[in-house]
Amino acid sequence: MQIIFSKEKALKKQMIFLAVVLLAFAAACSTAQSKSSKRDAENLKLLEQNVESTDSFFNQGKDHLVKNEFDKALESFGKSKYSQALFYKAIALGQLGKADEAQSAFKECVAKDILKNESNYNLAMISYDKGDASLAKELMESVVSADPEHTGALFFLGNLKYLENDMD
Image 1 (cartoon, one colour):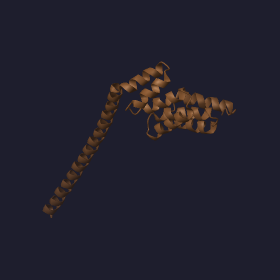
Image 2: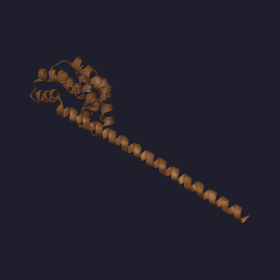
Image 3: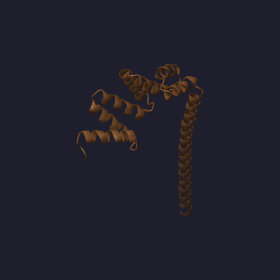
Image 4: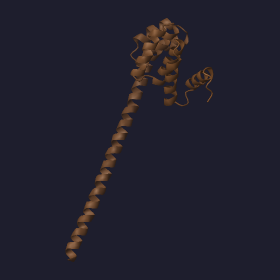
């Protein structure tokens, strides 16, 4: 009887040991996968930064924007391969008074997740300028929902509430 009991006890210990080893292995795999995903995201960010720094059209476009040379900026951003060039192209279009084209470009930015909050912010401003305060408010609320400290969106929403006499 004593021998059977020790075999059962030994088997139980082996099962517990095996379970611990499997748990440790699963945790290690999960950690390795998480580290790999983080590393991939960091590498992608570095690649994007590298593209920005070597994309002369993008850099020229930013320089033209600073100098208020919006036609030249638009041309440069149109030639750039950097994804964020679309956002800056929309900015240039807006500055040139081409609100419909700017609006389309900002919508494309949102769809492609390119500076999404800033694109929604600009879409709200265009909507408001076109007389659609309801859509502007909805877009600004989405910006604040994603970034509760977005000063421009908070200021805009505060002004809307003041104009609506809704100070609650």
